[in-house]
Image (cartoon, rainbow, N blue to C red; front, side, top):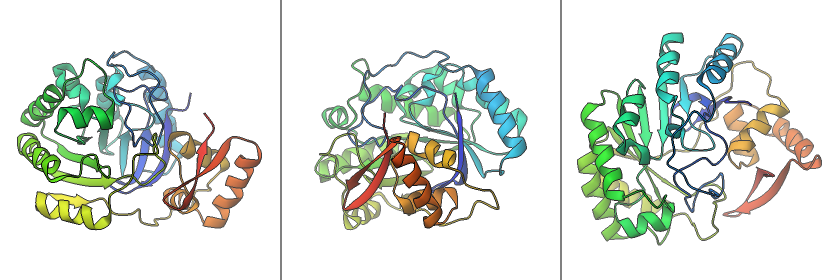
Length: 306
């Protein structure tokens, strides 16, 4: 199993090497906006879904031969903190390399003190909190039945008390769901408790799990950013940074699309290849039936056939 992907050009982390430590859609949430699709069955069960040894061996081999990334990032096709070996994996990576480690998480499992301890060695943690109103949170995130929003926020606040690294809190806004004044006020109160180093504002930019999940306007995001104050930022578009002199292959495009839909421009920027190169590889994957074309916000997107 390929647990390492990239490096890809990240909007937030520069050149990011992904570490995907759970099987596809192993998650505690099934968010309406998720670019990976709906979660067939949410779970809060932690276990070693993929062994630490397998992940570390693959990472070590990649670092010996691949481009050196700016960050090693736990992300991908599910919730990484559900892998009970994440603490061991982070500590081993820190012993292996000086490259900083980031954990991108939906934040739900941080209510567990063991999870807080496991991710504490990371240099940065990016949890998400898309609403501070229980009814809205469940509507957007379709959370596991045993999860309570109050306890999730408590867990984020407790993590802040013991964590010495950076917390970058992401909020993704969905038009008509969590963008009202009352929703933003509730989020503001929760943010004060969590006290993140930054608040990263996002919206729906790729084909979502549910077609009703629509983006808010740039003007609305700017209005929210101004309300939240100097810690808040709107996540900027990806910059076109080349991937040194590495040759981009069809397998690179395949791995990218296995984890998220993408259009030609996004994939070329992420992988540091020209649009014409990516178009040729997309054509090859399409002809083989591996990927399919869809449309979102008037743009063509390609996604892997699951």
